[in-house]
Image (tube, rainbow, N blue to C red):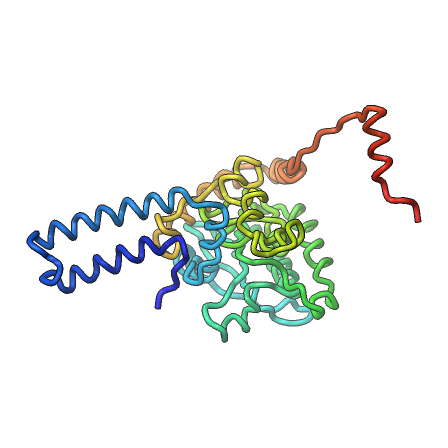
Length: 338
């Protein structure tokens, strides 16, 4: 049975009725030609689909980003890249299959492509650790990025993870340090770097391969410091407030573009990337090539300066001098010294 989301039910019901009519038209004619009835339902189906998918809430887009049939990193590598040769291991501890990467071609460009990979079923999810990389995954990614830098190959990263693995084993092997080193080193790599959020962009797990000259995002993907459920549990003390949290976090592609946190939105087919994987991959390839060509025109010095300024500009704050009354009120709420 195909996976369906709650907000897709009206579409599924109309599609089911349409399929029944096409299979057994004589049972439904009731005095009018079944061709006319089919056309009426087809128009209604198209109108319903457009109305739903052009007016998605932030939480509904999060659900689409997590859709189990949504294309993952290896799907895009298969459809948008050629001559892919996967490379394994971090040369320090182990092979992490939640992080994949290797040499490939994107159009006429030889590149190194790296991305987080989820699984389709229970067995593969265990193998891929549900797309949540361990420290060795980020160290493998850094090894491949340094290899790219050594041979002058552009880097393309595909982000789709709920976050880095938060378990004890990851902490023992210093997950925070591994991500922090990636942030520092990616800022200094001299080759062009293009990142694309293709599904979930969760916290430091996403940012660990997300420092780039250009950051793109698919229309129904999201990029956030915390999941809506995690935010809801902290602020509302109830994970059921995830829809409210998703709206408050402003994590959709449109919000991120307005905030200057991403550089371009990659459109998806109506209904989501999973409805036409090949078309989505072709669109992704087109946008990656366009951005790569633009970044490649910059000198190394210009590229490094631009990359640094890009991330320094993230986040805005306003300084305000408090009045004596406001200072007194703030002091009254301050915690007493230990």
